[in-house]
Image (tube, rainbow, N blue to C red; front, top):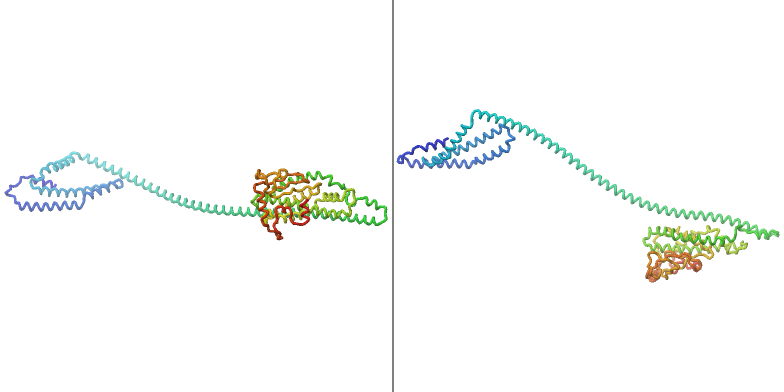
Amino acid sequence: MVAFTSSINTTRAPAPLDLVDWDVLKQDYSSRSAAMADTLRRLVNSSPYSVLQDKLDAWYKDYHVYSCDQNLNRCCELVELTSKIQGQLFTILNLTAQEGGHYSGVDTLKSRLLPWLGSCFTIAASSVSSDTSLSLIQESVEKDRKIRELSSVHESNLQKIEDQLCSTRIELDSVKRELVDTHIELDSTKNKSATTLLATEDEILHLKSELRVAQDQLDLYKRKLDVLDDYERQVRILRDEVSYLSAEKSVLQERLVRSRSPSPLLRRSRSVSPVRGESPTRAQLTSSSRHSRLVSRFSDLYATERLESQSLLRKYIDDLETVQRILFIAAVESFQAAKLAYRQFKSRVRKTLSSTHIGPESLEDAVVDYIVRNLDLYDVQTSINDVINAMNVNPRISFPPEVDFVLISSFIREACRIAFAMQTLDPPLDLAFSSDGELYSDVKYRRSFDSEFTAPLVAFHVWPALLEGDTVILKGEAVTRRGALWKSRSRSSSPVRSRSGSPSRTFMASHSRSPSPGRLSSSRL
């Protein structure tokens, strides 16, 4: 309004030029110009519009949060700030209009300021009535009430959401703790399971080792039990033999007494047999049946006992060729030991019966018949020990031996018994002569599955051939490979250590255990 009145004053009639004091005008103009610049500077430095804009932004952000009174206070605050700015602007407008004198700025005030002021006053006067003001006030109150209700609802909803969020966070924390506890329990369970698994594996290995030891002990006890059974059977046989010899001695003493006395009963006593009442030709009558049975037992020895002993040796020796050589040498040495034991046993029986033999059969037939009747008197354990001792120094298998040959004592025992019984036949059965590097013969052998079928020489023997005189009854088994002769010569020329310090032996000497005369004679047989 000050600016407006000042502008109105400027529209008055100007004073005459001669009455104007130019010095006063200059001084007044410079003072008003300085006041205007100072007011404008303060307005610029205070930055009222930036403050007004910041307040507007803050009010806009928090409008829905504030209550009606707070919003009105903000609005009044902004109106006051705006009025202050307008006051400063009107001051500058007044000073500017005064700088222009009586004529400058009149057109601008008339064209812009006065129409704007007139339109504002007319609109305000024409548009706002008392009823309209009351309705606006009611609407404003209603809006304020709704705003307060909405604000309360919003605050309650916000509080509920915050409560739910808090409870959700608490539940989430509890779930996280449970998850951590579960992970810890899982890790502990894994560690316990791993420890239990390791302990179980150790126990299994320990139990397996104990089982192997127990099985070895069981096999050892079985072998000892077999040996004990043999000893008991031999004791029974020896007791029967002692009783039989005692009875024979008493009969001989009676005959001696009767022969010395002059009695006609002498001829009658000579006609009576002092030993037995059975037929003296029993060995001859049963020769064919015993022949068939012994050949069948020899075949079973190859098909059953040999494979069982081979499986037993393979647990300790990986080389199949070495195992087959061991079993072949065991069979050959068993026959040699049995033949030697038969000759010795036959010599003892011949010596016993030579002084008392009376009968239609010859002394040799009586001796064979006695041996056939008393095969259990054969001391097979001695032959087993001889076979094992011979195998321990044999050059065709490793020396010192890789295993204890007592493991195959059952195989050696059966081979010795078969060989001993075969010597009671007429003619006796024997094994064919064999040596590594010999020429392969289809009459004596059949090739094994892993042989070289075009090779002419025998690399090593798996099983010997069975002979009756010069006729092959059962074929043996051999492995043929090329270069077998060179391998046999290189093997025979290698030095072999022996316990007695004797020189090395060749393959030809492998069938004999010692260079004794009895051994040489048995090999010739």
